[in-house]
Image (cartoon, rainbow, N blue to C red; front, side, top):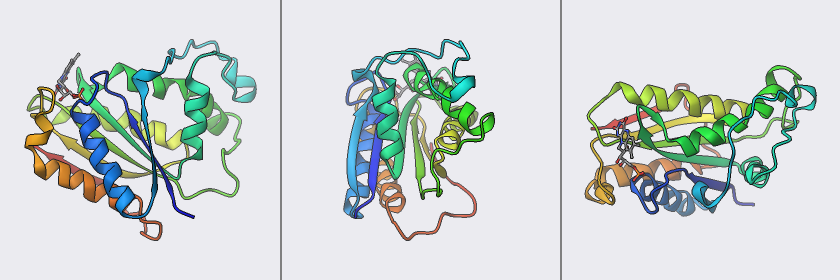
Length: 206
Ligand SMILES: Cc1cc2nc3c(=O)[nH]c(=O)nc-3n(C[C@H](O)[C@H](O)[C@H](O)COP(=O)(O)O)c2cc1C
């Protein structure tokens, strides 16, 4: 059975740069034989974590919004690609809402010691990030929350592709090097028998 790769586009800009990069990565995954699924976060309503701590009892979040079906899709996937623009040195707000709502999963893992999957599944994740500026440090603040998110989702972090100096809508299309790299990483991510590299892949293009 083919692997399921879920691409999550978090940018509020429809067909923006990170979205286009994600689509190339998904095309690479598809070429590797994976079944691909695309989710645009802005089509859903996700509230922030209300910090009510109800989840401390059982790992369940009581907030009623579109998060539960999105979580189901994230849990069903074998591979996750999360694409975000850099907004004020970190992930965009939409991505952060998604990440924060996973507090209930963090509680399951770190407090209740209830793994999501038994036996452990081979799940892997890739981060794609696009920024307009020349700043090199900003990508650390993008990688860290996404790595935390992959950790509580029990997704091994394959690595990241971070592109700078891409600003106006569609500017990524003038960066074939970046698009080719997204395709390559998407294909690599979807390789069922590829061993996970010892160190996460870290590609930065300026
Ligand atoms: C609210 C906002 C904040 C931004 N902050 C940054 C930033 O801190 N660093 C950066 O490199 N680019 C920043 N940008 C530029 C975007 O990252 C850039 O335009 C990117 O290509 C947008 O990707 P998208 O089309 O996928 O949304 C910002 C843009 C907006 C709208």
